[in-house]
Length: 539
Image 1 (tube, one colour):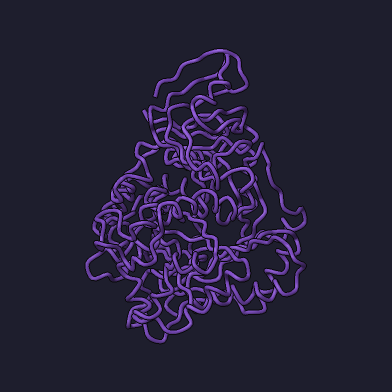
Image 2 (cartoon, one colour):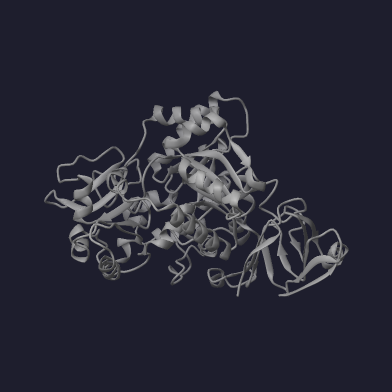
């Protein structure tokens, strides 16, 4: 793209000769834009854009490249992405390769120093069996090891980590978690959900400098994929304090919509929601509740037994009355409610709890969110939509889970799983995300999964997995832009390229709307613009 400077008009920058998909209800296509400050001063054709070119205006020839609104990531874990970039990378690796990484790391560390990593998935290993503590013991006998499963709801630990945490064969499972055991009743070395806390609570936190480094790495990674806004799905007061300091110092610029974790919610209720902080970069107006675990860990809470583990329905977290009371308190304080619900029992309880709140509160714009909305009883889709609840879904979860989902829940329940088309047809707004670092942050994988319902590595199964649930390209992109903005009360200022909205957009190397389907997953961001400023450019 050619960049030059001319004249002193009303625009800071003018972009011409583009293939711009605005995502606006009207004037969906344009060729030029002008930015002034953080916002768009003009969107239209090249002739109209010339009036905005002055002496100090930067003019960018897009050379026919495709432009879309900045990607709005509706569910990720911001500090988790950064921490993962500092940790051992076990994502999509064989067990043997992971153990080799642990062994090499142990040789570099002093005895007693914690080794952490993330990304393992037994479903891609031969036999699909959970790993054992003895395997880690052999690789790192003198260092406590904690490797988080890709879903984030299970850890694989060695014997030293268990000993330090005081976990023995006779330790009882807590509510909402489980210490997996062998047939002989001995600890396997795999732990789920709330049971993980005894171990993870012992891991020394990153230093302030390392945390700052991790957050910087996370922001740079997101910008490189065209992400200009993100929902940080569960944070605490300490992390928010650090984020504020980074914004104040000018070290952080990405737009973050923060979901406060339930444990810290009461303190935030005293101050109330905060929006538009740091020139529209930070919003704190949502509280997240965890209602179950994950399907991969068999801790998602189901209405009936798992098809591949009789007598087990997963791990719920709340009684009906307790969840209702939490929703009531958050809503009364003016906060949006978001609830992690993967299994059909968790989703039903979440819908039931909001239905009770909805019946009692005055008419208003509450936009309660269900995070994941992954496996849902067929009768609950319309109930959820009628209550104005939003589905924060992750399209890539379907293509990551397709090799095990039906084994977990069977052929009947699968009809209500990863059911995007069914949700849209009911009238639900879908906001898409990646759940990174559970999945790779790449939004183009999400767009491909939505349209193809096939794996990004091999494009399987051919023709798509339950293809009737696939979305159109427009619907998929809308879930990453305008509907994602709606899910955080921000549709008036972002999500589409319209005059007066933020100048947040990404220039692509491929025409998303017309390329072959298999090319979508391989698209790349050429340039990312946030608030009128270039934050990433491909070198």
